[in-house]
Structure formats: structure tokens, C-alpha cells
Image 1 (cartoon, rainbow, N blue to C red):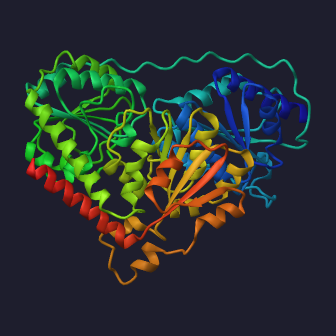
Image 2: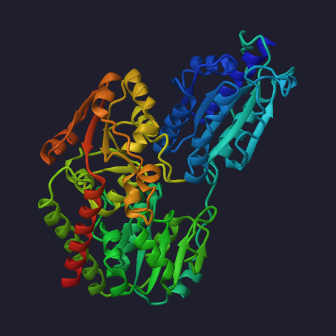
Image 3: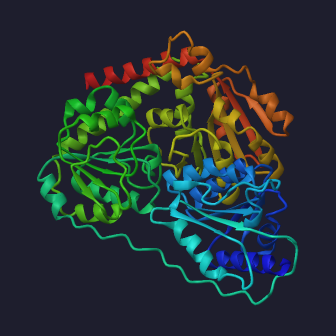
Length: 558
């Protein structure tokens, strides 16, 4: 039996390496021994060792999101396997390719009180990609591991990408030498996306002038296609920070960097676009998508796989490749008057100037100033991870636009804050260039053990924790002022993170002036570094209100 376990695990791992898997995250456990050893011996796969399964899974998710390639997650049996669920859920809704392989006791030990044994069959339910979950136990003869690896890889890659699950019941003995005659890997080709039929789009748009709205998306081809479309049609691009368009060397002359604040100020309603083309997931900006939800005008939504229109705003559904669709439409949609493009550019410029002036009069530290500093202080080719809740929203509102190659990433499939630091660490460990993670205090508390991983692996990353002592985002919601608000929503914790990080072996510093903050952002650390920016939740609401009012006055005057 030991030879069967080792042979199966080695053949499976070798086939995954042949398909292009380059990273695996492994946590300690006895039952997963055949898989852990096979991955450690495979030279084509970097095996990342972790202490706990939840953090390991999010570390792998970060690698997969940054590289756009599947990452293998390996756990032992029992609750260890269940710890993968949050990352599997994010992979499902965030469209990130993962391969979860959970080791198990053999089937004849289930429901008999055997230690560390639960029913792991279909453990993640509908959260796996295409409902692809397989349960097996290696027996004589060994299953066709190469074909199984291909099925895992294809399911994870999609379309759309997500997590595939293999549950393997290993019987004892767990150690042994594999049979060297492993099957060869199976070739894999990326599936084609349907080419666009633009006749229906052209009919719906007519000669209307409109806007291009690009939400969170990670296809590099969309950036070039969107700028080509905007240059030809003079349509402004309202770009989410996670769209790939807000920063970079591409033509940004049509990119609106303050679309959230312009929508909140009533600008979009006032200028009245006559049509919308939308790509990607729902934008971060609530004022923008609320406006789209209420607008009665042609709304073309291009979505290659599945359907992500929770606001039910689309009037024309286009199931095709977004980049190819924009390229085709750039020669078919009539150009809007030059005044249309100039009005949007002027409004965006006025909004940016109002933000700069207001922040210049606002004492640091404050949370919008943290987001604004990213645009000017970060080094080129930086990857920035934005935590859900306030950091991603502040980047949407206040980052603006930058000529630097800055890539924004986030776990926005289900907008959770757990595992955030681990995801950023995985991305930093597996990619080149500086990595910065902008975390809220509750996100960091959720994932404090990731600091141990950062120090142990020596991952070069700057972790910015904006510490407002609780759930600052709830101060912007109707719950504020309720009798139980502070205890059950704001949840103050009283933690100062600098000594916590230092106790875990992490270089740490509290930052109290914007100049020092910018200088530190511009340097690349050799290992993990934590910068703490302490703010006040009540003051934060006031600062946001002042900035929104400043933008409202600026665009009203214009």
C-alpha cells in the first residue's frame, strides 16, 4: 500500500507540474505525507510551508490571483481540511484558480469514531468550480493520475476560474517509494472565448454619446482595448481601481480617476450620459452603481462567462470577450462631440484639485491622505493589495490616477476581510517588484498569524495598517448611533500594532506625518515591514464629508 500511495501522489504532482502548476502551499499533517513529499521532491513546483491551513489557503489564493495560474493547497484530514473553505469561497466568486487537495482517512473508517476523521466528500459543496469535487482512495491499480491532474487543472482554470477539490483517502502505511514509471502529463490549451457579434450593440447604442464603466477585472487585454475605444469614440472611462486602468503607462487621457466622488456629487446625473458600456464585476463605488441602477438608458454589459449584474441594469447582454468587443466597437461607434470628453476631463481635474486643497488643510494622519499618497509615493512596478471595507473604497475615491505601473489587487469576490494579509504575502513571495498591503485594523486582527509567516519566510512587503480602533466603515452606515453600535459594530479593540509586530520579529513603525509616510512608501524593504497609521473613526467621517463637499462645490462651479 505504501508504494501505491507514493506512486499516486508522485504521478499526480508530476502531471500538475507538467501542466504549468508552479506553486503549492502545504501545512503539516500525517495523513497528507505522500502529497507533501511528492511536492517537495518536484523541482518544478515551489512548496510553501505554513503553520495553519486558513492562512496557507489565502497565501495560495494571493499567488494565484497575482500570477493568474492555479496553486495547489494541501492539508491533512479533519478540521484542517475545513479551514480551506473561506479561500475556496473567495476563489469561487473572485474567479481565482485553486486546486484544493485534502488528505483523508480511507472510506472504511468514516462514521466509526476514528480520530481526525470527518466526512470530507464534497466538503465545499457548491463553492468548487463547476461542482468539480472528486473523492477517491488510491488502490491497485493506481488511477490514471495524469488524466485526474488535467481534470483538476481544467476545472480550476475554468472558464470561469475557481477552486477544484480532490479528496484522497490514504491508508497506512503512508511512507514508501514511488514507482518511477509515472504517466506523462496531458497537454492543456486555454479555451477560446466567443468572438463578439456587435450588430445588436450598435443597434442599441445608435449615435448616442456615452460612458465606458470598467469594474474590477484582471485581463491585461482590456486595458489596451479600452484606451483604443475611448480614443476613437471620445467616451470617458469611469475606471474602478481594480480595473487595471487607473495607473500605468497606457493612455489615461480618457480615464476618470474620481468617478465615485463625481457620482456622489450629482455630476453624472447632471451631464446625463445617453448610453453605458460596462465590463467587469460591479464597481466599488456605490454612488456610481446606484446611478446606473436608476438610469433608464441603453446599458450594454459585456460578460464572457456567467452573469454579474446584481443591479439588473443591463439592457443588452453580450456573452463575449470584453477586449475583442471593445476593439470591434472602436471602429463602429460614432465619436462623441469633443465637448463631451472635455467636460469629463475638466470635472475630473477639478475634483482632483479640490481633494488636494482640502487634504492640504487637513492634519495627517487621515485615511483619505493614505490613499492619495499611494499615487505619488509608491515606486514604479508596485503591486498594491487593498483590504475590503475602507481601504479599497478610499483608493477608489482618492487615489485618482498615476503614470506609474501600479497594479491593484484585492479579495473582492465576496468582499471579506479575513485572510487579507496572507493573500498579499503570497503575491509578494511569488512575484517581482515591491508589494504594499493596505489593511484595516480588523483585517490585520483577523490574520495576525500571517505576520509569523512573513517573518519566517522573509517576504519583502510593506504592510500599512490604518488603525481606527474598530470597524470604521460602520460609521458611514445607518447603524451608527444605535444604542448597541459601539459594542456590536464598531467593536473597539485597543490594540497598538507596532509592539505586536515587533514581538513577532517584524520591523514596525508608527507614522504621524505625511512626509515620512511618503518617504517610507518610496523605499523597498528587504523583508516584512509594518507601518501603523492611527486615526479616529469619528474624525474620519468628518474628513470624508469635507472632501465630498469640496468636490461637489468644485464641479458645481465648473
